Image 1: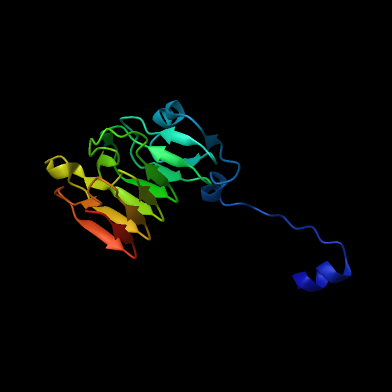
Image 2 (image 1 turned 180 degrees about the horizontal axis):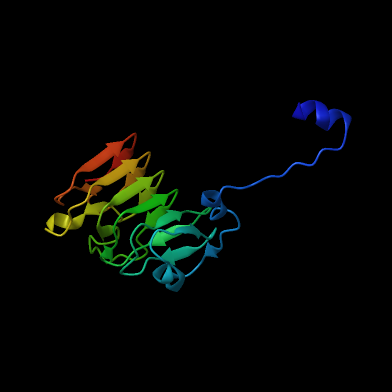
Length: 168
């Protein structure tokens, strides 16, 4: 009886952490576009608190981004990435260029508990044939001031679950 031994005598306990959880312990926080561009496929990227971080034009496959407190992510006109996940990330266009490209991407993946604000909508390939994967929006908020809030012009499916979407 482990509990009895702990209460009545010294007991040695060995704790073994499963290797699949070690990657989540002491993960370095990313603060630059260069660090994101250098990330290996399948890695998890923790975004620094209170920063504005621009995504590079191409990202390795299978990257998971986890947002920090008050972190804003901006994107170039098109980001090439597949099998991505963004969790708790705020996307915002930082200029008034009206390019419709602030949050456009090529590829497939998932946005969970993300926010899209300003001139920043979600664009699924914008009708291009190379957009073939599915996009999942889960518990997100999209408030597009000038751009389309959601454009499902790609060739994959677009799933929206428990989201708030405002805009045109």
